Amino acid sequence: MTKTELTKYKNIVLAKQAELELYIRNREGITIEKSPDALDEVQHAAERELAIRNLDRESNLLRNVRGAVRRMGEGTFGVCLHCEEDISQKRLNALPWAPFCIQCQEQYDRNREEMLSGDMDELLVNAA
Image (cartoon, rainbow, N blue to C red):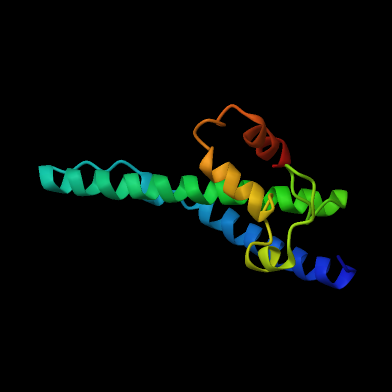
């Protein structure tokens, strides 16, 4: 990977990191609101659940983005955490913080439930 490409990816990843950190700080959607109306209570609970899921998704994404920033500093950006092969330019253009090549990502997605305590999750935790 050229220095110009790395700089391009670094700018994208750092911008995404700043965006996610700002989003995660806003936790207004998960506040518990009491209402005398039972239907309003149900509506508030559903909205809170959606906000929690969004926060969880964005937190996971931020973990991947921070891992990419760390890998850039270590000089291992663009290398799959599992098979240690280069991640394709096409994949990095679409998802610059991708920790895995497409084949390893597909394997991870297929086996996610079985691997919750396995090697790839440990790699992701250590990557962040």
